[in-house]
Amino acid sequence: MRVSRAQAEANRETVINVASRLFREHGFDGIGLKDLMKGAGLTQGGFYKQFRSKDDLAALASGRAMESAIRRWSRVAAGSSDPFGAVVGMYLSTGHQEEKGDGCPLAALGSDAARQSEEVRAPFQNGIEAHLQVLDELIPASDGTKQYEKAMVVLSLMVGAVTISRIMTDQAMSERLLETAADAVKHIAGGTEEE
Image (cartoon, rainbow, N blue to C red; front, top):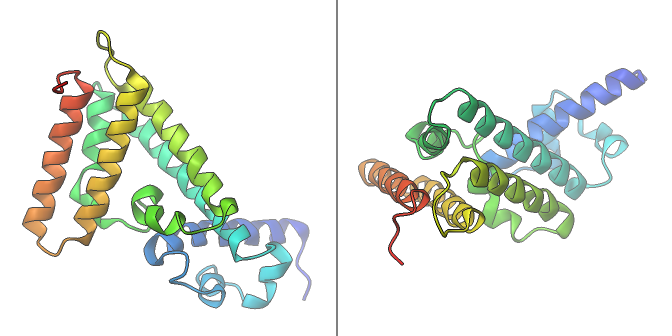
């Protein structure tokens, strides 16, 4: 049975959205095409009509995940009188730690993405730059410091803290790690870090 162009495009968008979540939950190599398509409510047979390869889908899904993460940061920042604190609080929370499928793709897929093709890594590069731009705008200005460099340190610390906290089996220690990272990020952003 043939599907209309509109339905084919809707199916493609569904596959990208589902893959965005499933890749974050299972990793790029932790889920096959059959299960990705099943998750989208479609059969594997239609995959190659919509995508050139699994890398093609991984790149599109990664781009979608990064866009979603940036929109989330912007939404959280816009809804607070302390935009930087709100983003840090949301990101370095146990709630975010637990939501692998809908959370930050850098924390969920960073080390996995580093082993992928340039096609798959490109959306991460773009997403990292977008995250840094948001942080650069949110970090309070201070004398004599380069905001963008602070943004690099802050992003690295935040992504690393969430990644490590997800690995840990001791929940109390994991929560303490997130709290300590949040304190350090605020300290760095406030311009009071030790030189």
